[in-house]
Structures are given as C-alpha cells and as structure tokens.
Length: 248
Length: 380
Figure 1 (cartoon, rainbow over the protein chains, first blue to last red):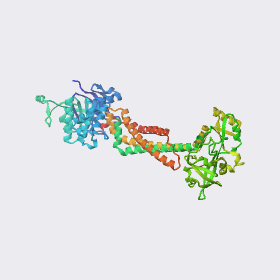
Figure 2: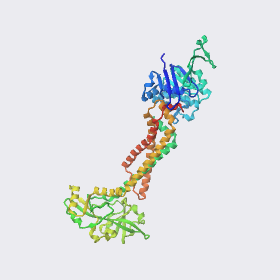
Figure 3: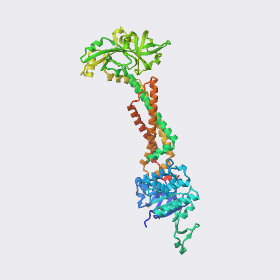
Figure 4: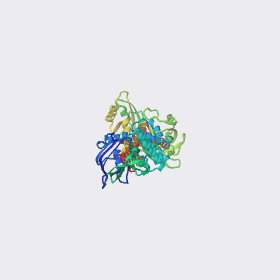
C-alpha cells in the first residue's frame, strides 16, 4: 500500500534558533491509519505536524503527502494543497467567533469548492445538529472541538492533522473526540495524525510515535490480538496490544 | 468569505459603530464644507448667472461683481451703436447703509435696475410684486435677510443712507456672497440710496454696469470684442466669463475656497484615520482566525475580501447616515441664512470618496494580513 504521508530525512532549523527543532526524521503513514505523535514540549511534534500540513517548510529533506511533494511547491500550490488535502484540528478549536457552528463548516466547504448543502450532515455526524445556529461562545469545549472536527472533515480531505485535540477537554469529551477521529479513519480511510501530550489518546492509535529532541525516539504499533501470540508484543495498560518496533 | 466580514461587524457592534461614526464624520464634514462652498459660489455670481444679458460691460480690471467703479452713463449710447448689439440696459451696484430701528447701522448692497427691462436678473418674489417698485420710495429685500435688517415687514418704512424707503416686496434666495443684504430698487432710486450718489460727478451721469443683449445670430464674443475696441476704458465680459471672474476672485484670490477645501480634506483625513484604526484593531483581534483561514488554504485575495467587505459595509452605512445628516444640517443652515447646496453630483462625488476612504482604510489591515504565517495557528 502506498503511504499517504512519506517523510524522508526531514530536518527543521528555525531562523535565529540555536538547535534543530526536527532532525533527520523519516516516517511513512498509511491511509486509514491513526498515528499519535507524543513527546515532551519542544520535542518537535508540532513542527513536524506543521511541515506535513504544508504550513512550514523543512530545512532539509522531503515530504510527500497524497503524492504531492511539498518541498517543490510554490505558496499558491501549498494553499491549494492545504485546501484540498488537509483538515486541521486545533487545540484551542480556532473556530471563527462571529460565525455559527453551521457557518464555520460552510466556510471550509466554500474553501474546498464543495456544495454547502453537506454542512448540516457534517454537523449531524459529530452529534451537533441541534447546535447549528449556536455561536462558538455558546458551546462547551467538547462541542467546539466537535465543530472543529466537522469543519476539518468538510469536503472529505484525505488527511486530518490534529494538534492537541483533547488538551482542553475533560476525559469524557476527549474520548468522544478521539472516537470520532478513529471512526472517520476506519470508515473513510482518512489518514489521521494526532499530536498530543495526553496519554489517554494512545488507546485510539494504530501507531504511537514518541519524539524527543527533534528525533523519533520510539514507534509503538497497535496490532491485532492474534498477532500477540509470538511473545514479541507488549500489552498496554488499557489492554490494547502494542509492540516496540523501532527506536532512534 | 464576504459574509465573514459582515458577521464580524454584526458580532462586534461597538467597533462597527466607531468605524461607521468615522465615516459619518467624514461624509458630513466633506458634504457640508463643499455644500457651503457651492452655496457661496452660487451666491457670488447669482445676479450675473440669472441675468438675461449676453454681455456685461464694466470699467477695466473689475475683480468681482460686488466691488465696483462707476463710469460715464453716456457710454450706454456708444455701446448701443456697436454693430451686433440689440439692447443695452443700465445696472447699478452700490454699497450703502441701512439704518436700524434701534439706531444702529447695517451695510447693504443697493441694486438699481429697470423694473421694465429685460436683461437684469428676474427677482424670485416670495411676497409682493416687482411692479410695486414703481411706487414712491419702493424697495425689495430678500426674506432671508430680514433679521439682519431689524425684521422689516411688507409696507414698513425704513431709512437707507439718509433717505426714506418703503418695503414693497420680499425675494427668496437672492443673497450675496459677502452675506451683505441686497436691496433691489429702480435705477433712479438706487442712485439716491447708494454711495454712487456721493461719487464723483452727478449721480445721474454715472453707471456701474451696462447689460447687453446681442442681436439674433450675432456672435457674442465678436460683439464683446467690438465693444472693447470701440469704447475706451471699458471691459466687456461674456456672462459666463464675468461669472467665473467673480467666483474666481472670492474662491481663489481671497483664499476662501482654499479654506473650505482644506477643512473638507482634514475631515477626510480624520475620518480615514478613525476608520482605518478601527478596522486595524478588528483585524488584530481576529489574527488567529485569519491564520486559521490561511492554514485552511484561503488565499490572500480571499482574506483581503473579508477586510474589504468590512470597510465597505462601514462605508455604505456611514455614507447613508452621513448624507441624511448632511441634508438635515444643510437645510438647517440654509434656513439660518447660510446657503448649503448638496446637488446630486456632490452626493456622487462624496460616495466615490467614501468608497476610496473605506477601501483605503482597509489597506493597513490587508498589509498586516500579508504577514500572517499559517503556522501561527499551532502556536496559539
């Protein structure tokens, strides 16, 4: 299967920064896969996410998303790439405060050139059909994040990039949001990459990648229960079967 | 995308109101300043423009209708003899003093003309009749100047210079640039009431202007040139030329016009600063949202449209409110004796200016949007 996201030896050095934010990272992420990127603050998770999303350029290396090689794209091509291929979900939701829940989704649909008629259905998919006319200030944190997810799903982008999607939510809302993302990945084949500090998110992942000092530190993969028999796999506290497959 | 701009304004009524007020301020100031200027310009040459004469003959180098030097009345006959001249009428303008009932004085301008003539400006009568000027001591005033002259009524006897006069009618809107009241009367009485009477030589021998109607088919400019060539020490002006000379004197040579234009320009600048700063503050507050849109793939043009829509909406609301307010204030000023003209071309010009003001005010915000990195959304 071809990787949706292919990263080869990518490094990022910020102007004026003394150290490398990301150093020599190589990674492939496949359609329908939920990948969680974890690590301490400053480990380079968000920088890597930003580069995959085409909002930041790598200093070295190559990134290809959905077959589009980002390192040779112009700003206009990157805009078009983000518009059609990427759905962003943010820690602080970043909904447009002056627009209702429905209108926030319509903006994303409009940007992607998709009929606005699918907006109510998207809102329904995240369980917020009754809140269509509510403004972000009138919604709870969990509801806002679900609107953010509906906005990210608008137009069916093949890749969802989520930055700390559960950080501002309680345990129940956090599970609900992650469940939603996992369902989309498994039902639609959407590739989901989640950056988080939240250990509760691990159980929704197909793969957990731990970063430290700008490098991939460890990749832990969820496997089917029947594959656990050879004794090579580790069992997580939540009961999901995981395996250590690599470390840098 | 434009809907986002509308919603931003609706959801932030305080800032939207400040921006609209900035536009209202500019629109009212520009409209009223220019409207007053137009009113003054109209008044400056009102009696010239309304006259039926093709040519006005005066002494040489006269600067304006109001500041006059008399000349020998016999020139009328010389003008009459110039080929192409069909009709000549005498027309006198003279400064004088109106004696107030309380013993005070007020300046006035005495216009002496032939009530049976065809060339002087027709009086726009509000009360009374021009024919009443044939009665003894009769004068006609403008109703808008009554207050300045001690509120005389129809039929009242008053004193002009040292002579008795009787008010037999009131005109409407026949007022001078200098705001000095016009006093209309016959040629003979005009010489009695005005300083002309005290001028050099006998009053009966002196005149200020000769109004000329050219013969049908005759070229006005050619006749004008023939009058100047035939009669020494006079200047013949076409009606349009004399009107422009009078306006030019008041507007340009006295600096009055410049003063109004500077005030109007300052209104534009102040309004522009208010609107631009308000829109900029709104944009700064929404920077993360613009960053999100940019991250989602919105182009700079699409983001600019949002800010531009905000500016233009404020502009449209401010223009509408400003024009209504200007019309109301203009009517109030006119009723108080200061002519304010707000013709359609002025409204169109102010609308175009407002469009540029509103869109120009958005430029600072649009410039700021250019510097947004979409990556900022992951740092907030």
